[in-house]
Figure 1 (spheres, rainbow, N blue to C red):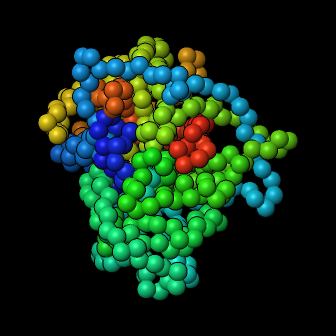
Figure 2: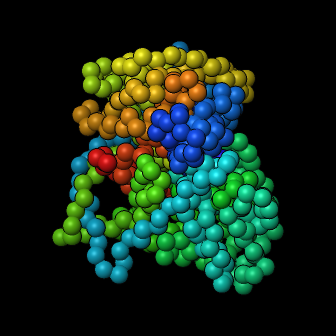
Length: 445
């Protein structure tokens, strides 16, 4: 279970490191079979949430992002340079030999990493293909060399068998939600989705501590990467023109875990078939290095009671839950019978009050989020249950917490929110990711 570290709300990191995709389950308290998409280490195979493990996960997540509690004089003012202004546009899919490449994602179905998404990446010459965790919440790449877990490791990188492997002579570390790894900074030939980067720098560690995955692929922006390691993989793809003329990639996480995919490369060409997305500016990409948007409204459905404000939310496929301001979370759950448990999470001299919601497993939590004054994106009720308490009450994926990051009120929209969306991540231009955007299309599945 991977993640990074920084200070403010869940998604804008100050330091760089990976966070793995923790897909979420549908309410299913009675089933004794493995639930594809279940949050690792937080629920067991029966879908029952372990309260202590969940609180530990909260603690680690706050540590990852380095959030601080909101104080009375906290500002949430955003300048026009960073606002998530909306543009409706048509994205043209290019035809021919340079078509974007689809990468099918795998889902780990063994403890303790149930529900993590992986993608195959090639290392070295000749190519060694290994499954790595896929993460939009971090920017760095690492792979293991000597894992020997009895449940399976996802394979090891055999650097001595690669003729293009080079040792830089430097060591470095990456921090995660529940862990950290230290290893050697090396370079080698890396292939992914038909793209190749020669002499890609990455961290070579002894053990990734994740059965079923050999490491982590960070898909975040350049500013949050670990400079001790070197230029991150996505930035090298951009700099070498391998992300299409739209400079980006597309992510779709499916509900059942058998049709999730990443499309590497986005092309925009007039006259080709079109697909509609709503496009938003990423907030301060050159400073934060995060896939951050400004959330303006959260409305409960169907009554449309709403929270309105300004919160920087991080679009993080590696987060198993979503976190919004406490009042917004209250409104999101207002249409169903529910119980709220407020958990104090102490960290770095601060105390965070996190509201955790429980509701009947046969009820539906339905709400929408707006990044503009008019366009709503609905969160599907089927994606809202983290798991059950074993007594017919399900724990919600949506939590309430008032936190800030660099003076901005902040939050996280994690894997549950992404499952009902098709999302395009455009990395912008130059190493500072100027003009980075996120395009979102609501799915009807």
